[in-house]
Image (cartoon, rainbow, N blue to C red; front, top):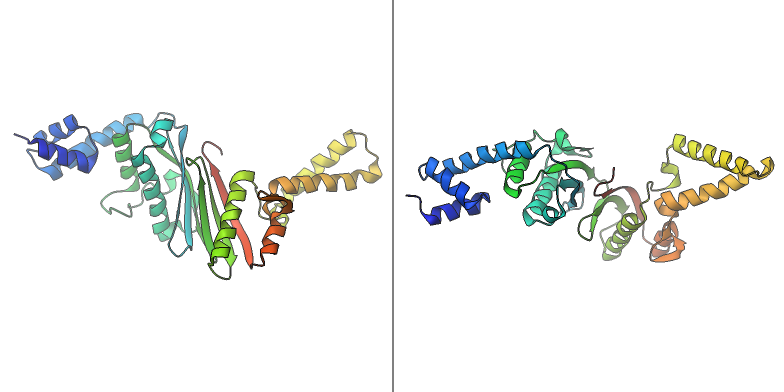
Length: 287
């Protein structure tokens, strides 16, 4: 006879349903470890059936090491908004971020789940990461997909930010003389700027030459078709390029807390030796 207490204990350990726990314990003749194995095998089988279902919802999760030298950002997707708010789903996202941060082979890397699925899970060496996610699919009851991740290993420091309910997140590397309160406030201002204004480049110099040339070519042709005199086209194009920089380049954007200043001017006026090195901005469902 399987006691209700033992069923409850197995449920707390695995998150499986009461009836599934009771059946597994009966099959395992009360051996809780064997019952866990039975549930895991059954759960993985269920997970395989769910693996083809669409995952349009999800969250952006970040993790930064205590010394602020390593940071990870990822997008974990699920089928419904309801599950995106589920504590087990959020915990899985954080554990995946911690896992990516913990393995040396992921240093300064980026990719999808396929790139790391066969790695041994940092918190439980008996499992591959693939098995961890499949177990979560079985427990939560929806398909789950780690669609992308990026890890920064910084010469300077890393700062991360997730907005609201996890729809938008930013990971940024920066250089500074120290980790003073003023520096951390400035770093926070920068990630808020990136989250809100969606820049694509740190500075004008970091725009790929071919992209800049293409933009210049398009703007030149547009201006020509507007019937502008040939001798002033170049000057007009330079003016239009300035607007392009204000939209796409972090340091050239109007600062969200004081639009009379550019981000570059704001950083300069703080008097801090602060440099944004690189950043990545993730939004759920965007490429």
